[in-house]
Length: 319
Image 1 (cartoon, rainbow, N blue to C red):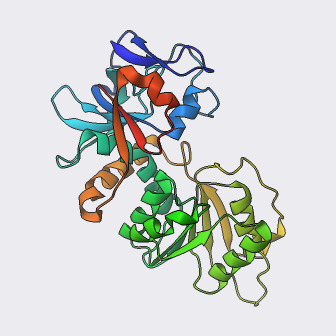
Image 2: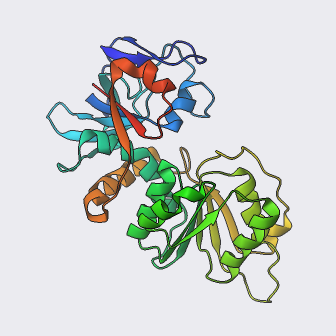
């Protein structure tokens, strides 16, 4: 069968042939129609992610949209390696598929699943956000951050604060539902008091962090120093990505003197089956919530070109 193949972690995948998988007990075979090229897929295919496979050749791809043997169109995730989603046929656990609503096309479903799931799972399974709470999004200008604004509003956030380096996107983020905007193109000395104002005045219940690095450090520093004699308000800080840095210095006193709770959301903190259920909920919400994702389709045979493309759109490779 045809597939995108990684035979060297240092090079982009190539279009080629590999033997089709055979379903094991508890698995179903899916005929792939579309698979998204996400940042997670790129890092896995480079061998640098904690979930990267070690057997070469391998087929990249975490999830996609395809058809079951009975003709049902489904979203699928975490196919059995070494054959990932960018193959004509994949073997997936039966619990890791969710039907795609008829009104949602293949490309939209494949493109929105990973970035939309990141915030949906973080808010529902990790932070357990309550309706009316305020949500701060660090890294709101990217595809995942933009969807996070929409998802937070749909799930009942009372107020959403979008934080991003590029101030030119403020109007776009407000149009998606952001109530306030914070520019991250500032020094830590300037940014920390801005975060402190958000924490102590309107209040922040949940932080969705796609960045880590300096913005996360500035926020954590802003939380420290509670001294009113009352217990500080809970703030669930959920790390989802590390685009601004892999590590930060952190003083222990910030945890003791605040209501800050640090956690992550990703592969391992939420089960595969639950992540797929989250995507099923997300896909059903596309219409009612008017969720949007900027995606472009490319044929799978052009995988090398797609891999090196500089487009800001979410690339979906199709069979």
